[in-house]
Every structure is written in structure tokens, then in C-alpha cells.
Amino acid sequence: MRGLVVVLVWCVCWSPISAQQGYLPLSRTLEAPYAEAMHRYKTSRHTGIRPYLRRDLEGLELRDTSALPSLLPVLDQWAGGARLRGGPLAEAEFGASVGEDDVVKYRTGAGAWLDWDLHEKLAFHVDGMVWNERFPDYLDTLVRATQVTPGEGYAFGDGPSFTHYDWNAYLNWHPSKYFDLTLGRGRHHFGEGYRSLFLSDNAYSYPYFKITTTFWHVRYVNLFTMMNDIRGADGVAGDFGRKFSSFHYLSWNASKRFNFAVFEGIVWQDNDPDYPRGFDINYLSPVVLYRPVEFAQGSPDNALLGFGMNVKLAKRNTLYINVMLDELVLREVREGDGWVGNKQAVQAGVVAYEAFQVPELTLRAEVNYVRPFMYTHSDTRQNYSHHGQPLAHPYGSNFVEALAVGDWRKGRWQVHERFSYAVMGQDTGGYSWGNNIFLPESARPPRDSEGRPQNFGYYHGDVLPKTILANELRAGYVVDPHGALLLEAGWQFRAALPDGGEDLITNYLRVGLSCRFRDRHPDQEVRYVLP
Image 1 (cartoon, helix red, strand yellow):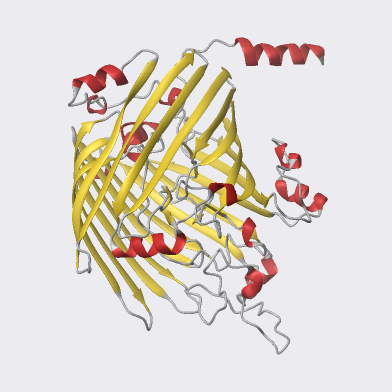
Image 2 (tube, one colour):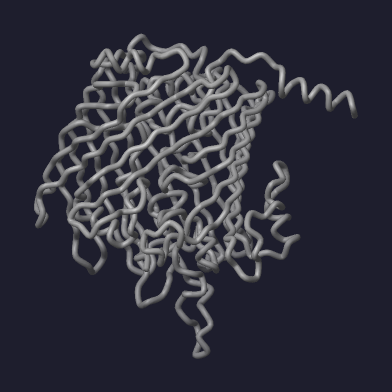
């Protein structure tokens, strides 16, 4: 036993480290030069865990066009520094949303990023931006209803423009080839899909502590976070409700073509008088399943379980399937009676790199299906959300979506196309039909004169279906690849077509300086109003 301890201490403290430490920003624009190489047949990267570790990018066979210099040479000097690297982040986009009362729209922002190699095993990063923005009508309605901008913080102001900000930081320590310990503030994305039904970067940044363990063909992530319930706080951070979450993600490269993954997560709040426990140390265990711990405590915490599989087809194609379970009773699933407890979500997709043998053309097709009441909870403080937004898919629950994404790059030119077709349900009559994750499950329609809630009859699209068509086309010219700054023109089309209601059409044209240092998620829909 003593010898084993000595070996472990040596592995943690004295293993030689030479690769660059830290993480690539959570940006598909910055990831693009590496994505195709990471997904090739016979590579062993764990591509379902984002942001990517920088050392995982070393040794990849990249195209010559992947290392573009900045058009402003002084930025190359900063970004190419040996130990200290940094640069500006800026946006100045202007456009018109045709057919709306206020046609003129804009988005302006400024910020910076900084990487600092404190030691060969220790890396520090910080980035931040502040924006002032006038949104197209559909996003303006969402901002006024939820009091937040999608993934970019609380919306300050009464309109027509809003100010918001976001910042991310981390301290990453890589003591050996087996472990990474990271303390920071930011977002994560688990799963191979463009969307994530496990944990996505749709919501605002949050404080976290992450342990990443890599051995053999396995990578295992333990993520502990503190999140906010902003309802009723009127933007005062000290009045936000606090809740905690713990996540496990196990990725196993079973062969050169197959990857299997297991996800589990639990959410609990710290201000329940029946469970005034703060961060529950029972959920710190890095190996146990959460459900047994939850049952052992007799607690009402919200626990979820997911499974994923990726298959590499040919040399540059990946097929993926992910399943997320909140509750599962096979007998009720087989009955098909629409039981309220049938809370499951399924994702299937395929991504092709160098599609049709066209260099740097990436095509993706994906389907997402989420049952009513998925991600909800009897105590709404423990629903699967943070800062007024879902932690998984931006549409929340009770929908099916077909998604197509295309990216093409040539030198400094980039073109991005994304089309989404979704059919979702809407709550009506003051009751929950499983659409609004911020309503408790007990808010279902009554089944008898005593007011007991109905337990059956909940199906996709109930009770009033709405169709959402969302398309975004962007074309840009890279100015500074280090900060993902582009001169960009974009067209956004969106049609919300509710059954029996008024159609809402958006045609938004814009041009200017765009920053893609972090991903944006404009596919949003008002599903709730936060008090």
C-alpha cells in the first residue's frame, strides 16, 4: 500500500510535461482548423469533451492554411509571445431587420483576452467583453421576457438597446500526463452533436472546478459548478438564488472507430430549509453514480443520466447517437399513454469533413427529439437551467428539431450556413404541458374535481404546436485569427408559425466587424417569462 502511494505521488508531481497547457476557447470558428484532423480515422482524441485541451491539438496533421497571420502585425507579436499572449476583442455590426417597427439594429462590443504560462505545468487565461445591442424583434422579446441575453449575461436597460457582459477565466494545472485540475469560470459542451442534450454552452458562464483524468483509451471528467436562479432578483447578483451541480462524463475510445460515453449530472439548491446543506460533499465522490447517493440521502435532487456512441465512418465521417434520461419506466414507455414520467431525449447525427472531397468543407445533419417535461423538476429551483436559460438545448423541452450545418473555409474566407426546422409544443390555459422548464411538474392540468394533476396524455407538440424555421448565412474575411475577428456579412431568416396564432417573420441583414471568440446561439424561442 505504501509503495502504491509513492508511485501515485511520483506520477502526479514529477512526470515530465512539454506540451502547451490550457484550453482552446469554446469557439467552433477557432476549433475549425483542428476539428477535421481530430476526427480522422485512427486518431484517439476525445472529441465529445469541449473546450479542447491544447495539448490534444499537438501532433495533428493540419493544412497549411490553418496558421493565418493577423492583418495587424502587432497582434501577431502579442499572440505569439513565448509565455504571455493576448489581444483585443471587438465587434461593430450594423444592419436592418426588414418589416419591423425599428428597422435599424446594431451590436457593438469591446474586450480582450490574455494567456499566461505561469509554469510549464500551470496556465492562466482570462477574457471578457461588454456589448451594447439592439436586437431583432424575436430576440428583443426573449430578452424582455427572460431578462438575459442568450449566453451573454443579464440584460441591463429598458430598451430599445441593452447592455450586457460576459467574462471567462481559468487556472489550469497539469501535474502529470494523467490529470488536469482546473478552477475557473466558463462554459462546457459534452457530446459530439452541434447541440448537446447533456450539457451545452447555451447558457451564461458559471464558476466551476474540473478534474480531467486521462489513462489508456479513457478520459473522465468531474465537473463541479455553482449556478444561479435569477428570478425575482431584478438583476441584483446578491439576490440570485444559488444552486449547485455535479457532472461526470466518461469517454472511452473502444477501438479506432468506436467511442462510447456515459454522462450523469445532478442539480440541487442550497436554500431549501428542509436541506440547508450548501455544497453537498456526498456528490464530491469522483466514481459513484449519483442516483444511489440521492436515494441513500432521501433527497429530492434532480438527477439525469445519459449515454452516447460515436462511430467513425470511412476516413473523415462521424455518426453519433446520444440518449438523455431524466426518468425511465420501460412499462410506461411500451404502453405509449404519454405518461408524465416519460422524460427522455434522443439525438442522432452525422458530420462529414472534406465532404464530397472538397477541402475544408464540413457538412452536418442532426435530429434532436426531447419529450415533454424533460429537464423540469417538481422544485423549479432545481430545473436544468442557469441564469434564465436551459443548460442543454436552447429550446428546452417538448420539441423535435432537424438541423443542417455547413462550413467552408479557404484561406481567410469563411462561409457558414445553418438551417433548423423545429416543431414544439406550447403551454396554454395556465397549465404546463411539459413545454416550460421553469414551471413545476405539479402545474399540469387537473384530472378530477379534487384538482389532482393529469398523469397521462402528454405527447410531442401538445397542446398547441408551433413550427420554427431558423436560417443563418454568414460570409467573412479573417482579420485576426487569434481573436477570431472577421469582417463579416450575415443574413438571418426566422419564421415562427404557431397553430391558430399570428406568424412572426424575421429578415435581418447585417455587416461589420464580428468576433467569434465564443459561440453564439441565436436559435432561441420565448418559452417562459421570468418574474
